[in-house]
Image 1 (cartoon, rainbow, N blue to C red):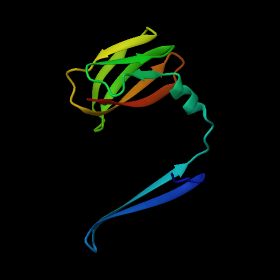
Image 2 (cartoon, rainbow, N blue to C red):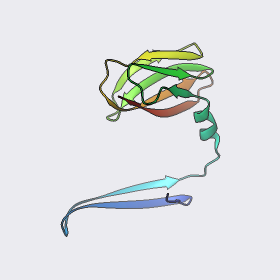
Image 3 (cartoon, rainbow, N blue to C red):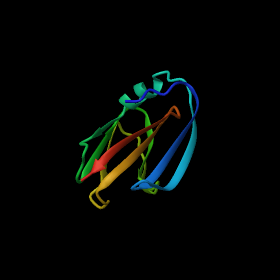
Image 4 (tube, helix red, strand yellow):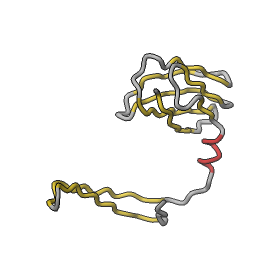
Length: 117
């Protein structure tokens, strides 16, 4: 694991074929401080089973909305939730990795991932 210090950073990645550079991309980003709040919030939402085949359970308190998106950012589910447990039928979506974005009644946003098999 690489530790990245607080501040502005630049990351340059090159794609090579043998010894010849084919392309190069540079990304600029800023690492801000980490309070640990995000980790506490993420632990307040539970996705199971993970990996999932037909049903995905999303459990947590004060959940207002749930959206599920694929790696391309396309939303495949968008649900208003007012229960402690929301059950999604995911049988019709393709196998792969998905992101679940939960917005709580307090306006907090929590993003988790799951694998559809």
